[in-house]
Amino acid sequence: MMYGDRGAWGERRYARGGFGFAGRGFAGRPGQEHGRGGRFGRVFDHGDLRYVLLGLIAQEPRHGYELIKAIEERFGGMYSPSPGVIYPTLTLLEELGYIRPEAAEGSRKRYAATEEGAAFLAANRAVVDRIFAKIAEIGAAYGGGPAPEIRRAMRNLEQALANRLGRGPLDTTQVQAVAAALDRAAAEIERG
Image 1 (tube, rainbow, N blue to C red):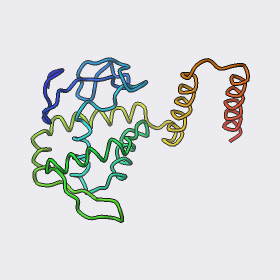
Image 2 (image 1 turned 45 degrees about the vertical axis):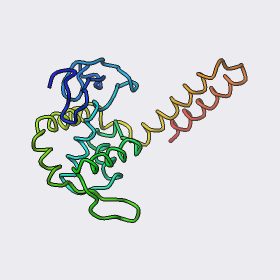
Image 3 (image 1 turned 180 degrees about the vertical axis):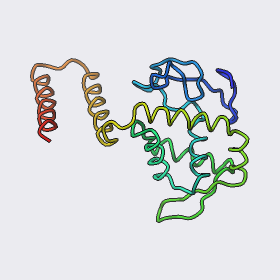
């Protein structure tokens, strides 16, 4: 598939930043090394998450939380998709007839791939394999660092600082309070 071509889902596919891999997105297309979405750019090209979820569900039936954890593990803890991305994508896959709810565990629906979903995956095997290979490459290159909970907390702190600083200049008292809070956190981490 060429840069900007229509994907199998009918959407236009454009590469985004790719975790420092010479600006290649998941399918190896050119893109900006640090595109939208923060330090690493967009994690998935448009539509790629659908392939990932369908591929994981085809391996074994799963519910949303299991899918989030499976993706996080494959990325070596470097990325964890939000429920706000996973569940609408699952709904879309169900509407397309590629997955179906198999059984419920309390309020959780466990999804299984349908025959149509398996056929779609088989017809798009090269794309699916490319996406999973890129995930493995990213997981190997960037995984194994701090636990996902620590990474999440670091992002929360960074976002809190950006939000506060974005509201306007701090007066001397506010600067001292922020610096003191950061120093306390650093001291506690060093002691831990």
